[in-house]
Image 1 (tube, rainbow, N blue to C red):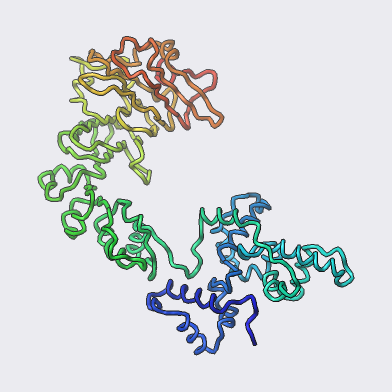
Image 2 (cartoon, helix red, strand yellow):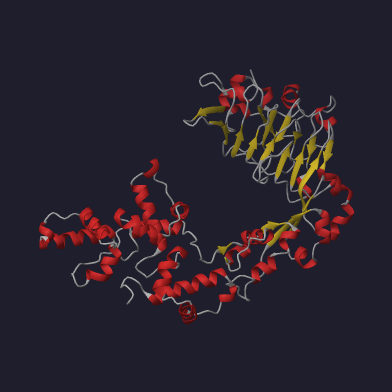
Length: 547
């Protein structure tokens, strides 16, 4: 028996070859004739293989049925109909629902899809074809009717056990029915450009870091492609993970001997860095030590052997103590401080390093510790060197007024001098220090132009503006201002989402005695999840702890 006209043997066999190659490298050299012979040896034609196995392997029977296109067309119909009360259905969700129901794309089309008006490919619009067929039937007054509809045609096709696609392939030409192209082509193309799902049997294309993670977990597919651009991502690995990089690259189906070496960073313990394969460790663009403060400090003499840039994470558990990282360890990337029963004052001197990217107090629960500064316990934190605590808080040569010291003491001090843009208040008292001005040759600055503070508690936490415009002792701060002065220079706005924006106008005359300030831009602080705020009652002064 001849194959039906809607089935294209050569197209199907080509798809089967691609599927086999994607599943196992042993089929890498197979061609269409090899598959045809395997079918023949099993007593099957290509069409018989499709009906028994191929459709459930998601191999398309012809160019007229594109599984990816079909999934996208189905997603569009779901969204147009606001199915399930939403219009955000994705191609991947449609694929998952088909799999959960035990249906292939072809199964769904035959059983439901063509009746629903889902298009099988860009070359055919199901409803438009059925409409064209209805026109011909009405012209002929077929079966005594002149009011055939699209629904009637679909019902007739179903009764005959065929789909619109099958009818078009078998009869459209002899019945002189035009097969219109799909009207949803543009929308489908846009949807597939955003997310084209990986159908069963297709070769996955992986970024290097995903492929390495899969290799570590022993889940790397036998056959895969690597996205070449990801070789330049400079992703971060442990030493053990980095050991897989070379083999993962060479094992890719699309591996090219002319590919340049991957760019990557290593962050690991001092011990792992010292005992890792020299080629792997030295091949990293950057090496960061991830260890406790005690280990790093004790191993200072060994750091040169590792040629590492600094610490991914230093941890110090101290009570009422001073840890001067700038003097003891000059290379710090991320600092975690916590423990003890008192408030710790942490000093970090950035002048001897590439800069402290993030500083944390207490327990850190965030996965990505490099996005901002988070405080979770009663630890005072500063991201610049302040000499020593006695000079800072002591009675002689005291830097700050009693009003400023009262805001700082008894909780966390978070200094946002520099590049910090996101902070999260703790459950304890937090004071956020914001500096402006230039002194001793420093460039003028107004940091925190896009500063964001989460979980600020009015009445407990406080903002503290500090002048760097001169070296007057004590340093001028907003703590010496009256509530009226603060409210003149700072405005508070509440948006519809409940977020509060506080704007500091450095050009206001209340700052006229602060020396040389950067007044070209306001500092805008977005406060999210503010506690204790009362619209129409809370003023800017309340955010500064000034009654």
